[in-house]
Image (cartoon, rainbow, N blue to C red; front, side):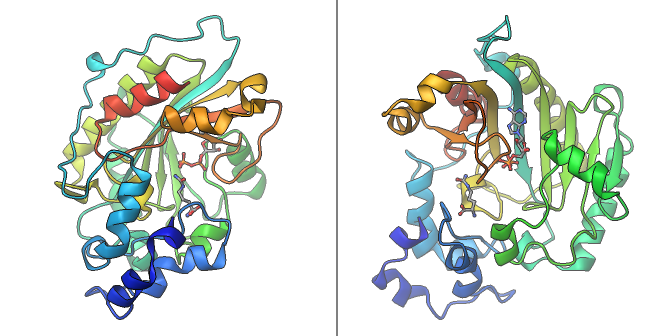
Length: 320
Ligand code: ADP
Ligand code: CIR
């Protein structure tokens, strides 16, 4: 998307620009320059990046979040009663699991590419102190990455709960600095409510469980996010919604997915075309940039900006 949208004219316009915290064009596009197989290839270092580099980010955002115009206002709806998504597979023949996550960043801190070790640690402290007060379904424990033994971390990754280590896209964006300090995962005993701390975004709030009960997963996420809204102020603007370091995660910050067995559909010549038509994105079984196995795909909503959270989940339901 960067290659398509950073035209010679746009390049001339933005090549010498800098945000007040020092984010340059080179910093924004380095991940894609290093990783030529990127799907997107840009990251924002701070809130100002989206304004200062709008000649690049504006068209790229409109390109990814089909139907959204940069001058539009972004809507929100986290009322689970507005969702119509009855379990499409009550017998459990196709859907292995359902997961919905949102990305969030705290007001008062830069986005991750320009964050510092002090910033990461301050965020970790603030977030984990609040999470420690959560009760009932949201009660859990924080596990810092630093000091976690390799085998425990690898099992959490293999079981789809924890982010992976050494991601080359994040590395080139400057997001892996001082790894693993300041990073960690909070979760309840059942691992149905989880919070990633200081990965690509400061927070990833996650609800997941086995099977296809999309409504239950969304309801738990609504409860978690509504509770977190009382504890934190998140970076947010009227037209871009919740801010994130990757422009694909703007707006709702939401990726609603199912792990679903579709060996025949995925082998169909028109698989990609059908996914595009329904605004869904297929990923491998171990998440973004991973391969798949046994015809099981991670199918999720592609658009996250310009439509509400309920509509994002609806996109995934309709497409899946
Ligand atoms: P993100 O969704 O946070 O942008 P990834 O695509 O890397 O990032 O996915 C993170 C992890 O979540 C991966 O281990 C992936 O397999 C897992 N995951 C995604 N969707 C589901 C799902 N529906 N069920 C179980 N695990 C899932
Ligand atoms: C890339 O450009 O491939 C990575 N920086 C990840 C982009 C986000 N992925 C996506 O398609 N939603």
